Length: 111
Image (cartoon, rainbow, N blue to C red; front, side):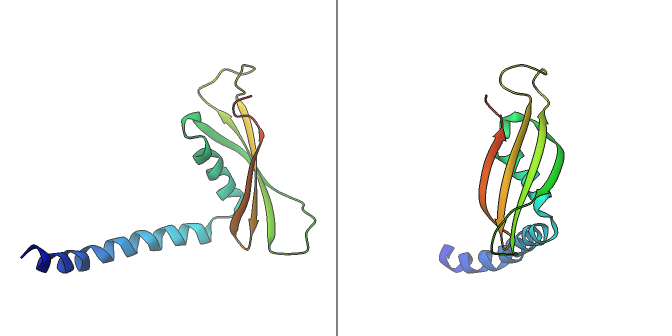
């Protein structure tokens, strides 16, 4: 009896999973590389309570026109200015054809 219910349950849950995947893909397609870089900075340091303050696209010399290097700066809201670890943080994100291929901290978060 349980084996007979499993396919029915999977069929009922499939539309919900597809809707969630569609929403995620839509979000990825609609966001700019700078917005994505700011979000990645927040995700990379989840306990940091980082507020994105500035985003920009950096000039890059490459053979591909599909390469974008974005930068994001932020402030950690849970730290006092001038302390250690640093309150101000920054990252660079490299995207090739819209796919993240590089991520690096350029300022902070722990030093």
